Image (cartoon, rainbow, N blue to C red; front, side, top):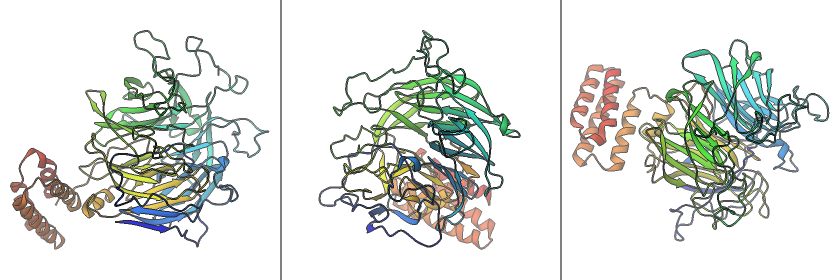
Length: 589
């Protein structure tokens, strides 16, 4: 169901602020609604906190405006108060901001409550959570080691901060690792063989600092003495002594394996102008990564590195090694990456326009400012398709592909993604050559006449709900609703996955505990694909219904018998996931 309404911000308790300061834009894709059925996202009325909204197959549970100290009411898009990324731990969401971070209690998703605000300027403020630690990226020159707000005094800081949040109401900075290009983003990387340390891969995109602010920094060319570009820093953090966090490697991930040149990947655009005819904005020049997503369970990371997408072996986290790379003549700026749960696919985003431009207009092609979906075959990435927000946005809305995460529906590859003022889009890429949108939420522009930076910096799934950090309008919480694209059982099966913490750039391997919801999810997928046949569909449905009834009544043997009967009915390679889910459930009873 699709609904279009004016936005009515909830009032009541003073709540958290979240302004998602993003950088990208989205465009149009084949499949946009026809003229006979116009997409409700087209023509939404403008406003800061009262814009019109359009929603499909989601329920908007809550919105919480940014708290005092993290917003300028006279300038909602103010760069000093941009809300950035999200990290999650236990019952808390950590909301990054260019002016620090906020911690919000999300134990009641429909009623998120601000717990703590930490003013600590420096942008970009991306946070990650690991146990009782919060890591925070700082890139701007206004950052101070002591989190002071007057940038003209104190010791300058650009790098990765480490906070102890054991007392969630009183976070304490315990380390501040200075870096030559600051920290635009960072990635938590764990080592399955070492429980005593965690690693941080740092991606700094700022200009190189002068040596008088950090010894050893230099702007040397690639063939010069140890240049501060063409590398990522690897920070090792002893969990028992996080104040000892320090750089242990400057990994040259872009080197040419034949010549040894450290600038061995794409060094600028291959054509004078972007395929749109405009300037490249930004330029695809691989001298750092913008974002790296680690998947420790499979020993791989995917780096979105300005001019290239790279695949990295992280089996030795302190010494990452590039094993494959791709480029794309349509991509202006490789921005972020997401694996599917099997590690057989990877999605890269293109931040064409840097997040501050309107790149989802009806004149923008679906391969510009979009996602590129690759299959991973024998350690190599093979392109399959593009996915872009399938509805045009106005010239007053910054819009492009940005941060998202998987939604853990068993048997499917589903992702929720932020598109700045294009809102959020939920899409299925199980068939990597044919991605399809299945849900969305969007607001009208902040200002109808010009771009005021806003929209979702990131939207992530965490323990049953979707959380969006909106640059200018605060935190949003959503629940998935059943539809022809996603059944109630699939939603329940995803909701049964509970994580102790979640950072989108530290991707966990999801394992589903056997349950009737998981079995029903696979059954619903077979019915949707119309592969079971009418008679088998009816039989499996009846056996599942009886088995669940017997299990609820405590009649274990009867439930086991029904599940055994089901598994005997199912055959065919296309139904192995359904059969295995039923067998796993039977064994668990």
